[in-house]
Length: 154
Image 1 (cartoon, rainbow, N blue to C red):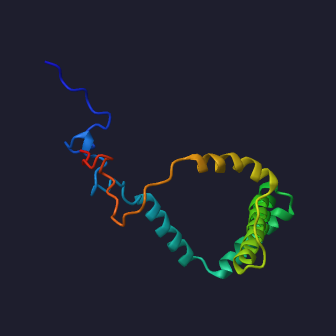
Image 2: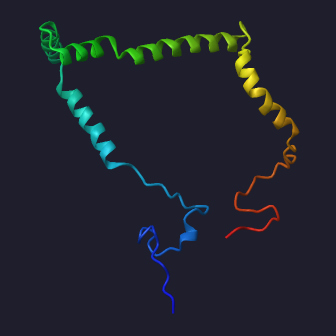
């Protein structure tokens, strides 16, 4: 008599068959990460313990070290005061895009794709036009567990 192979999930299923993992009503989520919530609590405690005067004192010490030529202190000083170069660039570009989108929403400008983007997307649009259309909406909610034949999957 053959014995069934052990499940690769071990006993994590609590004796449930593997087929019951992804069924309606089974949330399957891992839950909250304990370490993330613990780190958030620590940040709250640290913020409550640090005053503005403490921050000025620490930043003054960092600035003094940077002025002596301590390279890690210089890098940290610039990162803390100016931000990392890539981040500053990303923020600037994001602000430009947001301004353009606001103008487009208000109707001041019309957005058109660049010629290169049009050349790349045109074949996809043509292919989409040749695909069969979706069935008409009947107004009834879709049941994800129902097959095309109307039978329920188990």
